Image 1 (cartoon, chains in turn brown, red):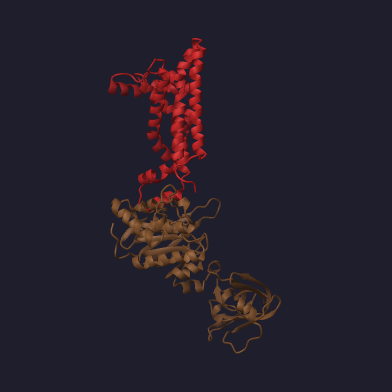
Image 2 (image 1 turned 90 degrees about the horizontal axis):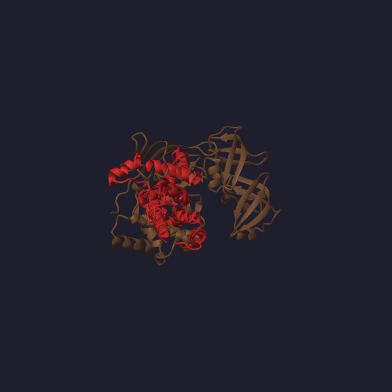
Length: 371
Length: 222
């Protein structure tokens, strides 16, 4: 087996109905193209991400559709083609990692290299284990090593087979940030060298920001949007996706009027008198809408600010301050409750305490309209 | 002592054959999605509930000179199958079948499906997955299967009586021998044999339970 130099694009148009016990039936209906590099598959749990990966790997069979890798068809319901998983050369790192508990680390990694001679196999295993900095663990069983080491070894076991596609189903959940970023660096280095399509399922914004070249947002079995991470996750169109993408503030409101010349519209928040100016969306006066605002985009001031380009200034009162790591979560009551993230230094400088009167400042373009 | 040796020989043959025949059947029972699977499961479990005489009776009919198996055997070897050691092995395999298959099915089913998926995406076909993943992880189940079918064959009586009769050195197993001794009021000899059989059975069951409690395992626990 020699590494293929050119990498093929993965295309999938599939439909699969899942009949859950008792639950309403769920339909996965996806059409997508994944080119070389890391594509993040993002979405709330139950969106169908794992089922989609299972279909690509050949572990689940779509009802209809076609999956191809460049010119090679892996699955085509119309032509009756279905390659078994062992012939697809699609590597898959499961969330549970699925290391073989009875085999040593070395034997686990060598598992997919059956076609090589003993000598080549040993060489390749040693090479990848040292690339992932776990060569010392060769003889250990998976039960004897740490979570981060297991994750590295599961990655190494998949990558050593020189796959044509790599599927990663939340492979880094449960790791601390430092370890995570070390593994992410390893993966990024490997990706730079090999350039194959990589589909990476995650809930974590940090992983998206660290890895993602493109994002496909999946919700309820359908692709909601795809593109650069900022375009997809910066302005989510759906409520659940907004929550998953880390928009702490989701506010209901009513459109007051549209100012098309300025590209904005005014929205009244809930039943309060507070108004926000937000980017013009597909809505008309009187419509009920929902706004998503990141807590990190909310500014606080302890005097009424003047001379700002930001169009939205709301008066309110601090309801609570809560330290979370090196960040402080401030809840501000402006008739509706806002969450703002501030630094401990800002809290000291502004002498913020619970009950204190403050002004919230929001840029128009920090307010995103969601369906 | 002849009877004891014969019983051991019979039990060893039967457990060996059951491993070879039972593995594919257990594999199919563990992984098939066929809707009619319950029918096969019931057939496999039949020897558990049937009186050995019923099983022995049909085995005898099948192996008789006019039965399908008997005819085949005569054509191949020139003599009948009933009242021979080979006939005894055949009937015992049927009789101990569930004791070998059921522990295998249970342990195959308990292997994490994700490991089988991992094996497949790493390029292994089902045969390689079986040898490298399923079987090693089912080792306690396989040991249980061997030991139970061995012990069960050692202790069988009704089937042997039906298809084997009581030919010294050919079909007179230890349980038949004990029966003989009792019939001729030789309680001392019967007691010695019975004690030996009891000790062996206890040892064997102790082994099975030790394996299943993971008193020892071939790999380190998680």
